[in-house]
Image (tube, rainbow, N blue to C red; front, side):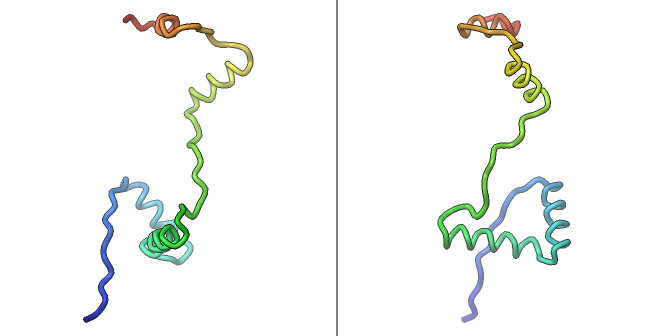
Amino acid sequence: MPSVNPVIQVRIDPEIKAAATEVAAGIGIPLSTLINAFVTRLAWEGKVPFELVAPVPKKEVQEAIQELEEGGGTVCSSIEEIYKAAGVQR
C-alpha cells in the first residue's frame, strides 16, 4: 500500500497567502514545501525555527511612548484618574 501524507488545512488571510506565495515563487520553492519544512523542523527540534518578536506598535502608540519618554503625557495614580483623563464615565 502506498504511503499517503496527511493534509493540514490552515485558515489565512488571502492577501498574506498571495504575498507568501509570491515570495516563495521568487526563491523558486513552492509555498507548500516551505510550510512542510517549517512543520518538520518544529517536530524534529521541538521549537519554532525562527525568532518570534512583538509587532511594531502603531504610529499613535509609538508617538505616545515617545511623549512619555520625553516627560510629557498625563500621570495618573489610580484607575479612576485614568478613566477621568480619558473622558470615560463609570
